[in-house]
Length: 70
Image (cartoon, rainbow, N blue to C red; front, side, top):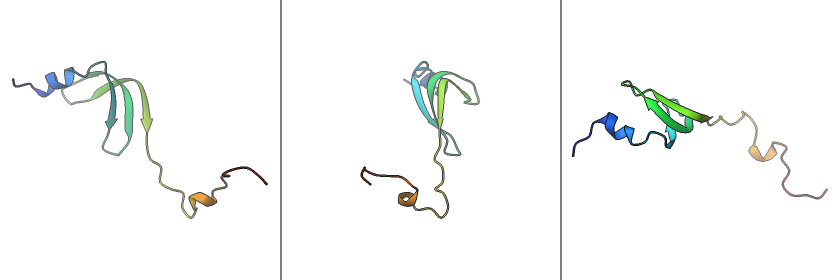
């Protein structure tokens, strides 16, 4: 049975989705709607992105303490 793109994507309405967009931002939310341009509507959405490491700092030297004792 052949299905169009729109009918394939309809099966995911009201499901929680993880979406990665072109600039590598990641969105997680409940998929509510879409249009002919594939714009998505996500409800209760959270955005995640990776930050570049700080220049000139070693992650171990960042002032973080591992363990106790003095």
